[in-house]
Image (cartoon, rainbow, N blue to C red; front, side, top):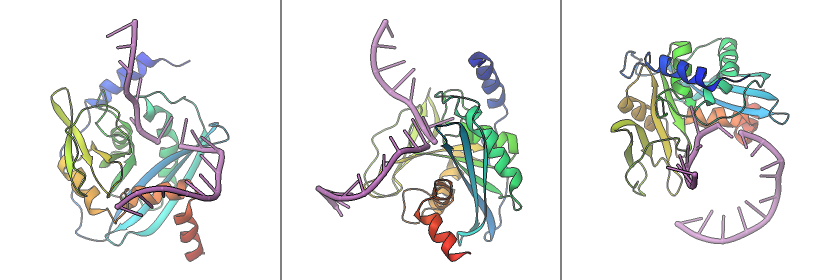
Length: 225
DNA sequence: GCGACAG
DNA sequence: ATCTTGTCGC
């Protein structure tokens, strides 16, 4: 059965291990950034994880892996990582080229107990991660201006847990937060540097498309096979 | 008690 | 997350 109290205790424990400072360095160019996305098949029976590795700053797709495993947990707000990380770990193992920085779909520390999936996965893999969510889980923020690029702090219990970013004109904002081994400011900077006119930063946009077999993926296949 | 609630 | 075409607005 499912013991929420146990999972909560595990989150509180792991949250204490999350590093919110930049303890990594990257080359100015030609290093690898990864993007992830998780989807479901067969009425949710199967969990499908996709990881796409891009070269920065050309955003050329270097590799991508898709892993499928039986779903073991239902979706419970605040406990998303336990449902999705197993498939993500498998996709990660399949990678020949491991990225130095990973954009994860979902929250980083912008979580009630400061352990969203980006932080959880970052800890498990021991790599720098950034949480890129399309919706808010917790926290409050001032009204976000309409101008592209505007961003305001996401606050919870008197502390900043991330940023709300207007990544594209007339689009809903993104909720950016540090996952692991990175600061909120650096997380925001990297997301901004990976925006190419779409609402989602390139790593996440590609992972989204590859995981759901969208047009961008079809285009990629057509040009690479 | 009531509402909110990543994917 | 997922089921799904066209359509309205900038």
